[in-house]
Length: 218
Image (cartoon, rainbow, N blue to C red; front, side, top):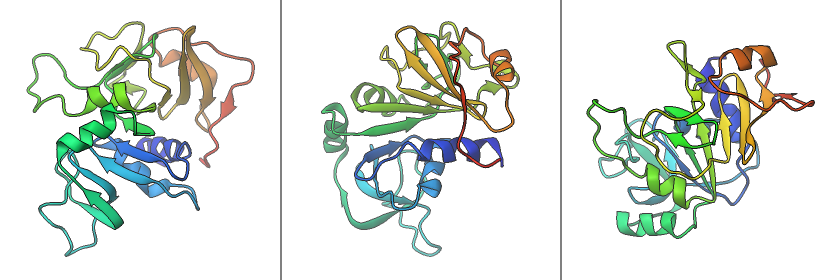
């Protein structure tokens, strides 16, 4: 199983029926493929839809149906479309149950940097800042390192998306829960030791006596 699939499958286990969920661009969109049986959620995109489905059937791509990154999507029966002002009103008003976002860095305080790298051209901040501030639960799905460099560090060196502490961090190596005391190692991936997680992490992790293995087959 590749690392992105493992991350998406583990994040999907956090979804509960009835949730209104926003998925960030890239890796987070894979979550739709791995929802547990019987779990029914509605997916929202900040550009103005509730009830999107990923990957429309061949021949049914429509230029007016896309996610926030411009990728084609489908719409489930009962879906609603509206302007971006209404969409951001839902986000800022606290009506979004969960957002799943990618990350460039997460620090020891549980703060996220995910919207830009200084000196590189970016199209804009998108909805990341509103989502981290407005969603009831913020889950970050990202790889543990990038080209061998830790992405979980003592203090973010990239511009913060928000000062709010995220709720859960899932990587291909571990599930980590940010708390007021620090980052708590909750689970390791199948076949991954606590020592391997610590070696790949650029800051201190709180390691309880009962670290579990992700409930995913290797």
